[in-house]
Image (tube, rainbow over all chains, first blue to last red; front, top):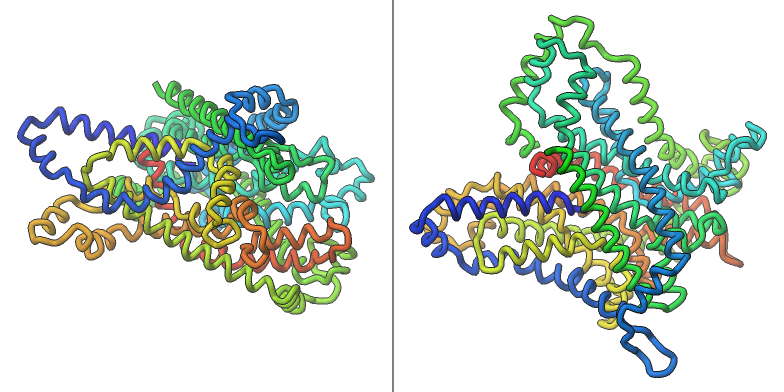
Length: 320
Length: 308
């Protein structure tokens, strides 16, 4: 979640330490060292202890597991990177990875553009009930993914769904969202519904921080509203857009809840290997292939880090 | 609001004061835009329509669900009997799930907020051996996606005999790197180092200073973190799904989905009306909390985006 903000905070903190160290002379540094004490650990310690237990140890354990294989004879055997080799030549894994990448390439831009439009509209002071729009569009974020998927699943469904009504009204020319051609779109709609307001709010908060004088000065210089958006608002939003993109990228690659619940309604269109996370989950809990499942988890971790870093790098480069 | 305003208050308030004058001068240019209002109304309807559907359909009986139009009331008004059934079905297990969810939220989200506040404050206001290492480790581990780790975490907890206990859900919920980051940024601004030095000169211990002075200054940031963690734990699904197989420890999310799955299993009773009414009852408390406290939330996000 907090990949990018954490990077920024760290960069800031690191910069702070460096300049403090360089700018102030020996005396200051000696004083600083005198104040440097173990007291801070009293505050940081408990968090780090739980953090280590709930995150660091499982990462280590996952890496360990991924290097072994459970064998019928001989028990647990060290197999090196064999599990990773298997994953990279596993057509089911590749199919699921391609599916979430397609999802990422289509759904994330649509949702981000919608969130951007909504944020610009909220910030424009041209709406009659700004708080009403802001709250209502943000509200679905509070709905659990399970409830959101159940609701949309019922709406999509053939038994008492709204879409079934639409289809009979259009004489069957309306697509069935739970058919295999439309399943990814149907899931994209649920995810967009859940998160467009959240992303809108990230962007809207960033817009609120822009000094209003800039707009007034631009208007005096004869800038149009579109010009203000193009030359002031969008550049001011760049960091916030990168943050929201990274959240969305991580979310897409880890897609699980929505397809896993819709799977019950459309087991053929949304099989249990639909996304990498679903595949890993089912390898473990249906297939008992814990070692292979751990390898897939690690591969997905690496893929996520690479893509998130690429988004961030691209965002930085555009700035320069 | 505090951080946003702390960061941008001179410019922001000034501009707001100037705005009406400008509007008068410019006349029609500042009027409401019909097109924008229509576009936003469409988005509003998109956001609210499924929730409206949920409310409407929680008033229907199982048979009316199939026979009446989905977006309007129809058949017998069965909301009260549905609620009654939700709480009595299967020996009242829904109430138990509700209680479990509250337990996970209070201990998990509450604990996560306390831990993140202490740690963020420690990072912002103390220099200690290993500080850089703490930062590097937290950053590195956060980059690895959490859900990808769920299966190894399950195996680890299983070896420690923690699965099928509340601890399996609570322990991972106690870690909020986002909260840790937000408090770190917030404490750096909100707690003046001079106050801490004055307290030290007066001989107050670090923890006493924290509880008497700093914790009060940090309250708005803590509320923001609390909201993030409350929503995250209330809505948590993947983690409890993996960790728990005993329905008596399920939270609402996993329990509801189990009711829904009954329809697909052979011999299972179809209880869609209970799934829908139960969903409504799951959503109402979190939405109430959310609407009541969302103003703090906004400022927390702003703090993140301004700083980032």
